[in-house]
Amino acid sequence: MEEQPKKPKKNSKAIIKAIIFAAFIIGAISLIRFTPVKNYLTAEELSRFLETAGLWAPVVYMMIYVVGVCLFLPGTLLTGLGAAIFGAYWGFVYVWFGAMIGAGAAFFIGRTLGREFAASLIGDKLKKYDDAIERNGFATVLYLRLVYFPFTPMNFGMGLTKVRFRDYVAGTGLGIIVGTFIFTFFIGTLKDVWASGNWGELISFKVFFSIGLFIFSFFIPKIIKKIKGEK
Image (tube, rainbow, N blue to C red):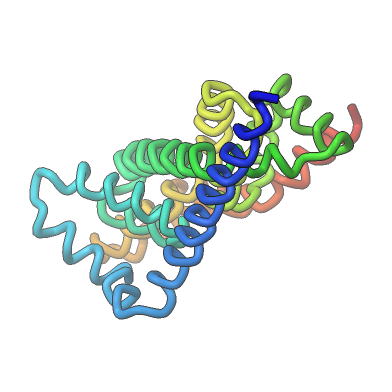
């Protein structure tokens, strides 16, 4: 009898957190799409802002990436910007770290504000899937990253599941390496050709290799799904 009064309190706390979580998601999307803030989130404006940061530009860029991930800013914009400003190789490093920290932050928000409420909604049928994600967290996250499951929704969504944080981080870190490198290498290579003004380099091995990798990246999800299906 003494435990009866505690249940409503626990449920109400979960509901309040869920409402805050929903408000955060709606607010983030609205901020980016329906306010003047969107005018400052273009490649030109962000590039100009980073130029004023000087030696701190890499750190500022990674901070922008982290905030951008949590606010549903398109990852292609942030990644392309990093490759265009810092080049194919350093761009890859800064993009990867920014994406990893952003993914962790979004996961933490989802886990803190939404997991308790999500757990209360899970029935017996869904519970077995939730338990399976906990047991096979690394493999699940790695697979979803390799097939290019939408980055930001997955960050928040995984926070609602029982997946362990270490499995989530490991699966994300390994899963985004290939796609991130291919995209930054492609953009960075074209940027170098554009900056040099030597259009003859467009027929160089590096350019063709970057284009080949970029095209190949579109087939990665199908290859992964086929391999998984065969097993």
